[in-house]
Image 1 (cartoon, protein in one colour):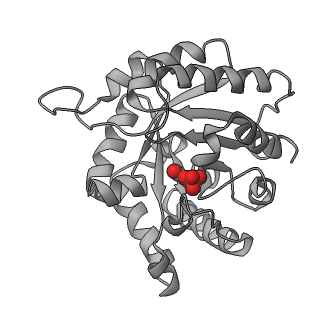
Image 2 (cartoon, rainbow, N blue to C red):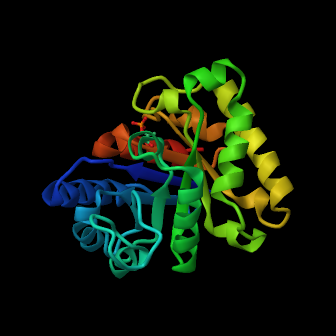
Image 3 (cartoon, rainbow, N blue to C red):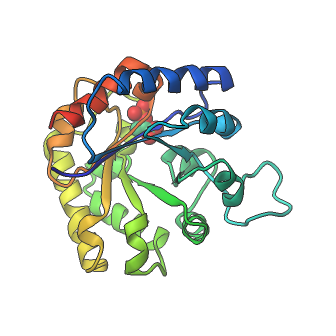
Length: 255
Ligand code: PEP
C-alpha cells in the first residue's frame, strides 16, 4: 500500500475559534475510521492560528504545517515568521513556493531555495509547490517549467536531505478553479517528476512524496490517489469543510 500524505492548505481563512472547531471536527470523524498507517494528515492554518491549532491537534494523528516562513531565524524582517517560531508550536511541515506567493508576492525559486534550506536546517519538512500556467501547458512547456522550478528551488541540496522534502505538483490553472487536471495529465506529469527526481537523487528520489494539488475534492480524490506516483494531495478549498476533507481522507483510506 503506497504512502499518502494529505495536507490541507487553509490559506487566509479561519480565525482561532474556527481553527479549533475545524480541527475538533476532523478529529471526531477520524476517530470513527480505522485509518491505515500509510496515511498522514496535515493541516496548515494561517500563522496567527498556529498556536490554537497546535493545542487542538494534541493527542491526535493530525500534524501541523505552516503556509510560509522566512529564511532567517530572527531579525529586522517586519511581518515575517521564522522556522524556530514555527518549531516552538510543534510545526512539522511548511508549504513553500505556493503559486499564490509566487504570483502575488513575487517569490522566485532562489528565494524559495533559501527557505527550504532554513526549514531543513531546523528539521522542518518543506512542501515545495511547483506548477505551470495554462498558457505554459498549452505551449507544451510544462516539463521545462517544472524542471527549472525543481532545479532552482532545490539547488545545492543533497540526496540525503530529499527524504524530508515533499513536492506538490499544482497546475496553476487547476488551483481554486474547480478544474482538475485529468488522470492522463496527472499520470504523465507525476511520471516525469518521478523520473527526474530519481535521476537527480538516486538514493531517495524513488521515495519522495509527490502530492497532486488543484481542485481536489471528495468526488475526484479516489481516482487521483489511484494514479501511479501520486502520493497524496495538497487540498485548498475542500480542506475547510470537515465532511469534504474527511471524505478525501476516506478515499485514500479505501485504496
Ligand atoms: C492549494 O491552495 O494548494 C489548492 C490546491 O487549492 P484548491 O484545492 O482550492 O484548488
